[in-house]
Amino acid sequence: MAVSPTRHTDHFASAPQISPADVAHIAALGYRTLINNRPDGEGGIEQPTSAEIEAAAAAAGLRYAYLPVVSGQITEPQARRFAELLATSPKPVLAFCRSGARSQNLFRMASGRGSAPAAAPASAGACQWGDSHDIVIVGGGSAGIGLAASLKKRQPNLQIAIIEPADKHYYQPAWTLVGAGEFEAADSVREMAAVMPAGVTWIKAAATGFDPEKRQVLIDRGNPVSYQYLVVAPGLKLDWEAIPGLVETLGKNGVTSNYRYDLAPYTWSLVRSMKPGKAIFTQPPMPIKCAGAPQKAMYLSCSEWEKLGVLKNIDVRFHNAGAVLFGVPDFVPPLMAYVKRYGAGLHFNSRLVAIDGPAKRAWFEEKDADGQVRQVEQAFDMIHVVPPQTAPDVVRESVLANADGWVDVNQLTLQHVRYPNVFSLGDACSSPNAKTAAAARKQIVVVAENLLALRAGRELPTRYDGYGSCPLTVEKGKIVLAEFGFGGKLLPTFPLDPTVARRSAWLLKKDLLPAIYWNAMLKGREWLARPLGS
Image (tube, rainbow, N blue to C red):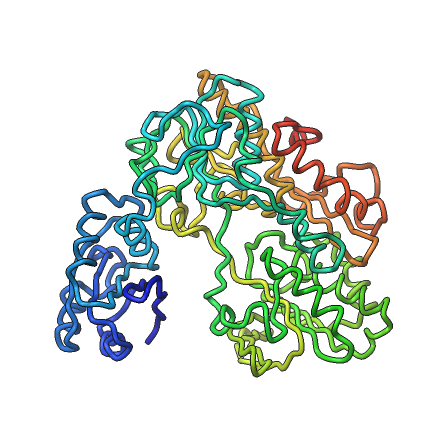
């Protein structure tokens, strides 16, 4: 079978597009009903028709239902019909669409997971969910919370709503240090209610679609949310499932990742216990959240092993799906100096494609200079995995997305290229900057000033310079503070050579930046946040 079902309950699973040839295997897995949620013709001639899959289902003895749903436009009647099918069909049921996202969202709506709105926190405003808000922000991460606070600082009377289903808010840049034993994981998380800006309505739900013509956001609990202006900032999707065998072994068998709150402490546990052995660090294709983080895990681990005197006994490998160590050439020489110091082996154009945790084996597809691809098997004692990353399904399958799935914005103004009252910032937007919290901090100013100018009927005044920052933790106690903008232009905040590893940059990242994040960025205080030239 080309795709694997994702089981949500004992009686329901979802899957990406299936073919007629898959149906017999689906029946062999025990499924008794197929629900097709993808409209015919959506994927061109490569997409099998409903009639073709229905015929295969009949031959396999499966019940079949066709409930086509347009991407990003699930309606309440469709959710009710889906609920009827679930209630009356032989079980277990497998529903599918292009990626599985529409089927999952239909299931969440149909199963009553939030058929009534959750109560807003005490600090929330008086607006009801069905009201039309001045501004609706999708996403309660650093970009969404920071922007809401910034807008409220500028115009306290704005009626702002944030759509965010999570209970917790994380300071993710700290997880690299957690994986090195230099930061406590518990200090990187707070309750979402505690960071929600005063006077902002928190809609505790997940966005399931966008209807910019009606100025509405569809959600998985309750009626659509109406807006005058929309900001899309849901972050990106860490696609752990894209690597076969990974999900089953995360957090055990020496398989870890600093890209998850619960796994970063396991990284430190593995580093401390490693004496001799083979340690692999991986980096997937771009774009990813914090492009330097995969190699930062390697440098900090090597620094610890060096301090303990065991580095000479550890075979360190860095498998990078890209062709270069770092995308901004100015920073490659100082990084290469540390690669040589630690004796790390570099494997470029090498992408992790499968893993067997219990057997401690990983498989990579490696491309040579002639473009020929071969699969290479590697043993490991410890492997730090960075998963492939994409735009969230709700964005990728919506009319707001560009061809690559990201919110299609003008990279200078962060305004949507087709819908003027829509903006985006953070990891989900199409601007070709580094996807970091530091980038979001600068983008907040751009979106806040441009959105309010548009609302007042004025020209958009502020331009984004592409600023991103990647504090490259090359050893414990020293950092190369990489700050750059569009085209790799260096944009250092301080009048120092940015390619030199410094103790001061370490103190900035470890001690100052967390405090700035919680007490300034999320509070609407914009210290050194204005893009250059704006």
